[in-house]
Picture 1: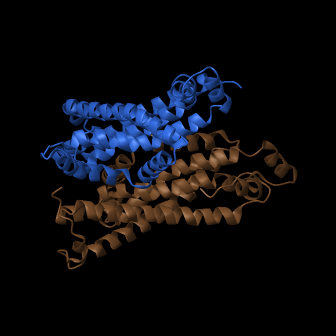
Picture 2: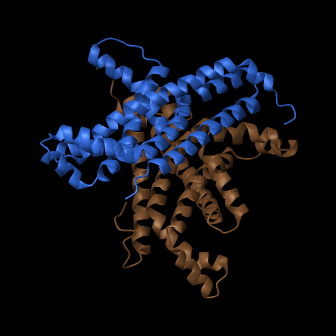
Picture 3: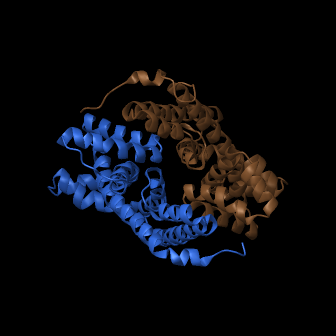
Length: 244
Length: 226
């Protein structure tokens, strides 16, 4: 193969005065920031939606179900483009202009990725709550808890433990999905990957490095949540065995 | 909202339909290829041969930990290098064609995990029964285990295909003209992002929503009562 290997190029200076390896590190930083912020949005909203879908109130269930159907059946990249290029045109002019000019890209990207992931998390939270025996809720109500209190003290603490493995894989997915935000101008790892290829043509070296970086992010997330899983495990239950 | 211009959509409908056709072609190709390779990987993973197990596990874990957009771009750039190395000639592949290959090998990793749990859902006694009838390993798998695994996992395989159908939109990264790519190219020319991106979202939603409802009904119909 007449491919010219050159690992040294990482230490060469790019146009902006930074070295290429610094581009990779900065991309890694943005990927982490976007992913963690989106994960926070997704966990919060996903939990609310998931709980809504298990309540006895019909309209709450309908709202939650509609949300999940809507956000799961449109590709992520299309959703991001909607938030960036369509929503600002549909809202009142003043807000639209503010969204286009003053609102930082990263906020829109985080909201987009967060709302997309929330649908998946809602699905898991719901199945976690539904996995509990009905008697748990009845027991709570019999103790004089309100509906909300049965969630707060009885059902959610168990439901989260049950779905923790699924949440772990969703948290790893969000790092991969964050790569799509390059399309709306976030300077994250994949963006830098693409840019470095354009500037240097050292495809193989940078592919190896960026692949390893994504591996590392997934691995760290996996270990952190395995730790949480271990710490929150309820003794005597089968659920939660295995660190995956 | 009042100036939503439907004529932009009707005027470009042909181009959009071409894009949608490409998206469907990639989806179907990657589904068939992915399920075949995925099944082979699952069999390797469950075999008693250690190197085969490692290979399958490595393959699956590798593709499951990298972002799809990165694989799409990397294959697009590296495949020609590899072909040149193997054949000694420069063979231009093109973004459209490289996507067929990328999605097949990428989705194989996901289909393989589904097939693996499908095979594991078949009771062990079935394999014993196959051998007792004098079947070879291949016959036992082909005639006894895989049909049941496939049936059990059909809804999950189809759900994965809906995900795949949506993921084809990521060929945006290499500039191939899929459904979304077509809409994006029209937007660049006509500067009507609202009409174009909304159309894409609505069409994707209708197709995926309808398919996922069908999968749900199928799931209820084929469930084996034990």
